[in-house]
Length: 365
Image 1 (cartoon, helix red, strand yellow):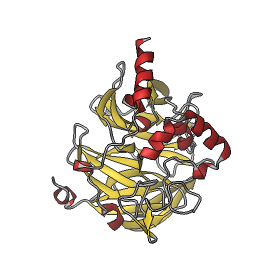
Image 2: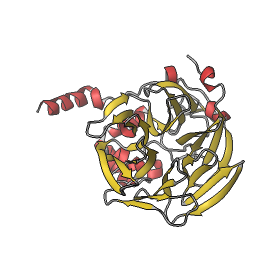
Image 3: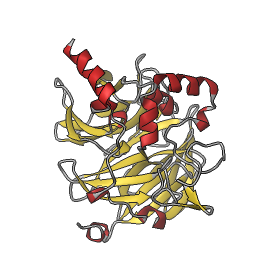
Image 4: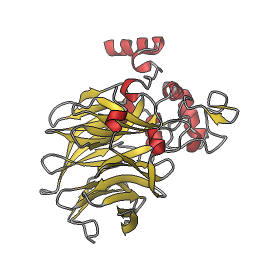
């Protein structure tokens, strides 16, 4: 009863979960255009995730598994369904999630038959894989009802059905670690626990077996996604797009959302996108976006590019941006490869490379 009264008061007063304010890009998240200076290594049709064994870079491009070595891209193999996540293991094996519904473990990227296949009736949107400290795999499953490509639908339905699973290759078992997350999208080992991105709640949580998730980083102005470890300690956190007050407002108007989703093509919903500015039918047009045909860099972003460098405690140190007037939007993966940071900008379909040397000094507060 008290919770219901509090929720009604919050909606009436526009506070708590009912607020439509969005935190500003400030401090460690101060905007720049560093991602626009990144070198394009490869252009793909549907790049999704990255993995490395230390010498080769593996790229998930739709159903194709690509390898990039010495500046040359080759197709390693092709699957019957699109690859939704990748993870390279220390012994040279490769874990591959297909269509969000199953995870296969191959002794090597080119091995014909998988050594282990994880299939669970509950799997629906496996979107990230990570290696835990005990050599098991952690899989994030974004939604129990919407597929890996239907994340905008999941957001607009206000779903909170994300799960985190532990996959044990030795015992060939699947265990659910937690559920009820607002779109779980990315994980990384953190001691005996896992840091997990909770996109729709704009935060990172620490998932420990047998305990409730603990908030590590909250109130982000973006929708966080995949995580990888950084050299020297800490993590790289990608954000596939930024939040806006318009989307926050629409999320709190159920009648409008239902009509919009029923009557308008999904490409033109008032929802975050991985790429924008391609059609006059898109929402958020006009002088608040452009002046005399020029996009304002400070305009409300429908799509955006961002990766955040976190310290060992999961707190932001600095960030790399592609602002509204940039191109490298929809950053869904980032991984260190030698002296470089390699990223996927899914909006334009690019695999990017950015030298690591000098980044920390360049963005030192």
